[in-house]
Length: 436
Image (cartoon, rainbow, N blue to C red; front, top):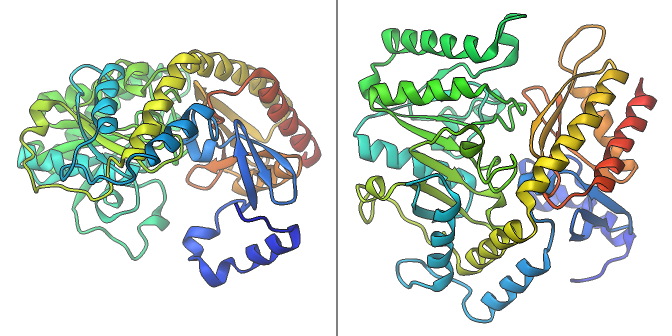
């Protein structure tokens, strides 16, 4: 890598607006780095940063894991580009075989693409093609991507749709948000009953269920706020789909590959979709995703109805195979459960200390820390940004989510250990103390 002095770096960063679109380059915190390894970024000024973002839930096996790097180098020595279909190669076939072993039963056929959004697009197209039905039902607050098809079912923030209203007509049902449940009522009972009523109203007044191709949802709401629905609610979604011949799509782009402590959230909740979109953690940072379904469904999606030039790239497939191997060999599913529970325990101690923390929730190493203004009770995105910025000054990188940016995401690599968890939480403790 070309070396630059810190002054050179500052000049480069200052020129971002001349070279890169603001929609690409103005995210938080725009940190200049020269290297990443394990659970750390290394800043251009030499500062070492503990990474609690995993590249937004991508680097599940840690940055630049030696086994992944070796697989990438070996693949580059033999084959850089497919395209799959014109030629065929070992890494894509072996990856498909290995994915079958970790996915729920009969989710055993793959269309490989490059990004989570592409995997969602593929799932929507597959559902419409197979059912010959025109409409899709999604759930309010879920995020599925920013291309036009995926945007038509994304409702985490209205700004994503501004001036981009999708041409696909879709319908929405409410997600199982905790604030909907009356105090003292069991969510496992309340939310399935509410969903039954909401779906009945939707099908009575807006769209006949016989015209609905699929329902799509995040089994754990990601960008919309890290909301964990009751298992019974997901089971009710499955039952409603079965009742009306509607296909169920799980968007497991963020929840996949060990993030919840199981390979996928479908296994965490023991609810099986008909179609799954997977990406992010699949290839340790290389662009790769897949639309997954049964062979029975995929065989109804003939040649030419969908396609790709770069999807299933041989180097990305090799990296994905190495990543799967690391997760298994290093027992990272178990580590996600253990470290996730450890983090939740200590974060709840912080919640007792600081009124600004209104909720702490998570499964595995997918943890949300929600902030509200103690005086007004309103979501406090400004406070989140203060916490993120002050944490960064102390060498720890967090990220945000929620409709108003009111939730701190804690999504470290699955390789994280107790000492690193302690460091991150101690920094949060110091920051909240200084702010309060």
